[in-house]
Length: 119
Image (cartoon, rainbow, N blue to C red):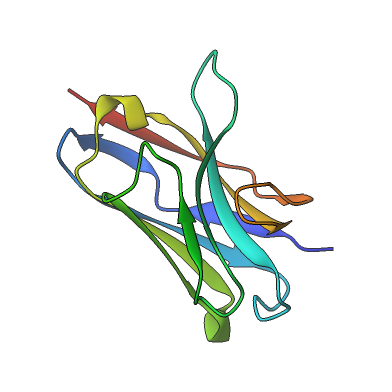
């Protein structure tokens, strides 16, 4: 069982930046793909980014390519999502996920952290 806890969400103006963090209860070098998904009110959960356990492979949703960067620090059991050039349409609850494959989610979810981008 892996427990995930996100942090770093908040309110930011359009064009600003935020960095989300997710700490895992199990070592992130347990070969889990780590990922971020998001869900806006009234919309389905959307893939944002994923990273392989080595960090050598990363995947991004089309809407965030070039603006968001996913990274991980296995020594700290953490995965990060650096978000730049934020837009109002990035407003959502962001969820950390573990155990998936590329853009597909795995079994383990965090509780989510709210990101709100004002125009």
